[in-house]
Length: 600
Ligand code: M6R
Image (cartoon, rainbow, N blue to C red; front, side, top):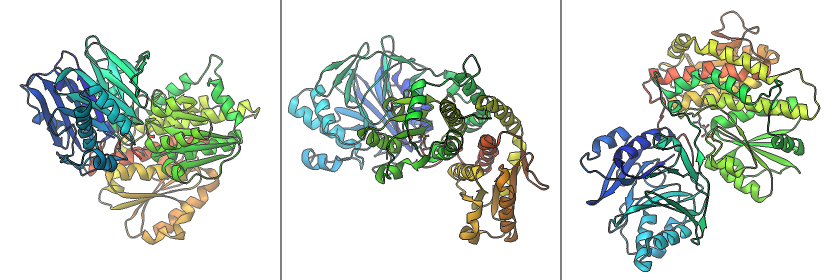
């Protein structure tokens, strides 16, 4: 959600900025812009729409060696050229990009900017106007920047350039992600190291309420009182080829196909030399010390949490509650005496989850983050982290992160059970190997799912997914996948709930997909299928080998009953992918959505 790139060095800045913004496209955006600075002044280009359009707009003749760029996902003010970043101060001296939401922008406007005519509807513009007003007062840009930042309430990652200074980018952050990348006679600023991996793999973390002064050949970090802070850089461990599509038409398809490798990677990362589970002992202890686990997550990660609850309760005998982060944040339930909070987040940047993390830290409760990005905000701010090892996930629709989350939760549950002395007849590492082969068998049958997507979703306005037990959790994820990328209105229901209301919506031809992988409810879910068929539904049953019946549409290879979500979700992901493709939707970048949801 929104992306920032900044560059100061000796190369062609607009190329670095445009390439960087392209790498941030996956985060979701609706407008984009860049500002470069040279002896002629600031060269500002903005468009509503894609980076490709911005590329066409950018004047190729104006060479500059510093600048800032931005992709905007609209919050305050519609997506438009006027509201796109960078924004400029009234005199045009200062130019700024911002991610996040300024909560007190009305107050700042009333107190400091009553004489300023704003050019946009954004909360961002008040920051750059404020800097100009305060600079007139102090006649010191750094001081004006620092004072302005100190006045802001809310979330922000900011990069500022000054028309009178071709040697400095001013940077600050609070809650929103931002990194400074270090190079040889150049430095970069980026929301995410993926944007500037081509330039450098050395990055400095920036903490909340720090100010960073980025020059061509040095970077200085200060707190809001101007006190210098020293910090060692870290190496971004992302392989540049991981963030390329290669021969795939879409990242989503590539990431679906990568799932067997991710399973094997997780086995390798969580297995010791004796083939036992290898897990951070402090995480184990935290699990043992808690009397109840509270899983906090959003979207697909929440759906993985629902599956994880089953593992932890059934295997480790620890009670678990799973909460939607944005609900928990404003409506905290009664907590147990020794809660452990487990945050599940692919990006590690989801603002709704972070808001819960901040609150429970204030209450003194421990937190574990399960994430694909170990250096992310949720990872840094929690007491413990478990890494998903799924490789960068670029498509907005989460696929391999979901299956990785479930695999890591299974390992965590079994590790806890063993530490509690519970004897289990279930080796997750071995079973995940079987899952990996089953996933491969599924991804090899893409034509089948392509045809099924045509048969069921080519023209439908809505679709229903039903399941019971474990399958109920997977159908919720199946519905989310289909709706977010194909825009078909889709819902996932517990099979037994249909006749309590939803069955009223079934009419001739309504697609209903049922998943049946659980022996104890196989009979009942098939009863539900008959109910919808009797009302004209175009039904389809995806069942587990061994539970299958004549006329089932697809039979899943057999895996351990607890791990069936890892295989039953693959056809659902592929059905969603092909449905979106047939409907000519933008699969990797669905409308209105962002990969990293960094505002509440
Ligand atoms: O990065 P996170 O796992 O915290 O993101 C949570 C949701 O925003 C995310 O899963 C979203 O629902 C995906 N677009 C689903 O495909």
